[in-house]
Amino acid sequence: CLTKQTHRRTQHQAIMTSCTALLSFLATSLLISIAAAFTALPLLSRHNTHAATTAQTRQFFATAAAQDDTNTPTTNTNNDDAQKVVIIGAGWGGLSAAHALSKSSSPLQITIVDAAPRVGGLVRDGFSTINNTLSSKAEAGQHGFWDNYYNIFSLLQDDLQSKISNVDEVLTGYAEQGQYSPNGLEAVWPVYRDSKPNLPTGLAQALYTKFVNLPPLDRATAAPLVLAFSEFDDSPEAWKRYDSISFRDLCIKLGVSKRCYEEAFEPMILTGLFAPGAECSAAAALGMAYFFVLKSQNSFDVRWCRGNIGELIFDPWVELLEERGVRFETSTRVQGFEMEDNCISNVVCSSTRNDKKGEIISLEADTVVFGLGGAALNAMVRNSPELAQYSEFRKFANLRGTGVLATRLYLDTVLDTEYSANACWGFDEGVGMTFFDITKLHGLDVTNRTDGVGSIIEVDYYHAASLLVMSDEAIVEKVKKDLNTILGLQCINANVVDAAVVRLPQAVNWYSPGSYSNMPDAKSSSIDNAFFCGDLVRSRHGSWSQEKAYVSGIEAANLILSRQEGSGIIPLPSDEPHVALGRSALTLAKTIVGRGDPNKAPSLVDFLW
Image 1: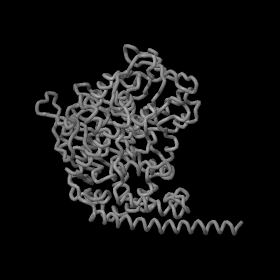
Image 2: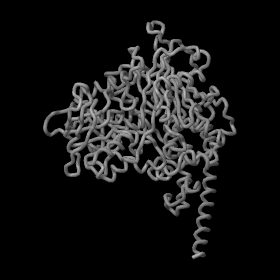
Image 3: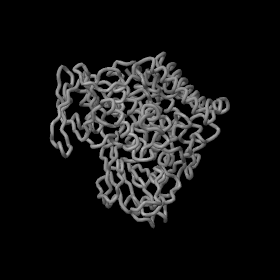
């Protein structure tokens, strides 16, 4: 036995040594490929890059139109043959599913149910100020649209063209963004598309991002993460491996310095995944960072909504859907389900509207789409014996959300903010923070205001359960104090005219280590007519946040209508050459070590335990 154990140990050590050598070779080859790409790749101008993207999108839709019937929209029909679709949740995912289904030529009756009085899910608007002295309504945060939101941009520019005549009136242009700590300005994110020359991704972000205080040596300690990004290819296998470890542990074990982690990566995770890196899956962190930051040089360029997203985007979208016959049941909470032959036959709801409070509504359903976040799915399973009888749905009881505090201060002075959109760190341990100059982003003219309001500043906190329990007055005082620290004397001398405080407990999905196994697929494996959409749904598209939720709605519609996978969805561009080379080299290395099967070779994660 000892001889066998010694042999196995020796064999394992040999494999690990071989993998270490191969991974070291990979890291070197990646650095060489970046340098080669820098000198060999054609440097595209801003105009040419835009033209290439536009041509790719037009070609995609020309192909899609030839493959399916998504360009022949029909209104809902009331005939007995129509398939009755009930969509639970009116966020990006639920609205997207209704949008894609309503474009089909199939006879459908589509009903969207949401407990809130306004559509939009987490990003809805309509919140009043504390003193209720202002006519304007606040929303749950300020909302950005990043460069890789190809499908949402297509929605705004093409599908909503009859409702939104000019997207530039809805979204801002690109601008620099700041990052602050209690010590002052820490970093500036430029408009990457304006940074010349165009460089390979990774190199561009490293050279063009302006770190004020983080030393180059600390930044250099992030280099080993190249290995993790190379191995993590968004496949189910990669998710299972990297989901078992937190992002903080991954960084520590790869040698990222404490300062680099705390000043560069922790703020990114807190504002991107809404929880500290120690409590976030490494898989989620790698996927999010690659999509938002590293997919291309321009990935982090963002346009912000010029006003409340509910008024500028969701209201026109709802109007279009209602014209197609989609029915909305807002202020309506799902109470339970009726089952028949392993299918949901009825969705039982109760109205919370003042004129119909307590009224029970039973919606007949041939198909049910759950467009909910993790916490809402959790609550629905806990309160529904019909769903809890299935092990697939019982897994959702493990899902949870993290809290968001969205605040908006109306000041009596016009502040001179250097950057209109900013991320912050270091103000509260384990809490992410952003602040926005709404006056600038929304293009508001304060010269003719008669309510005494100057600047309107939005300050949002993430992983904010410790702040949600504070009173409105204490929250406003804290927000003003944080802004005073950042903006100095001009803010200290300003007074708060009114404020909005929006508490969103467990509102955003928490991608904790091990959560991947509990996430839903687009189609239920246990209830024959149940489907899922939202940014929690497992997908191979590669997108995140609002774009992923929107794409997942189309994916659910494709499954419902038995369309070809990917119909009506704009895919993300291919990996850049040096990234593809690195991933190919790693796959080759693992194939050799795994004796023909890369999945049998050790993962980088295996070395870290």
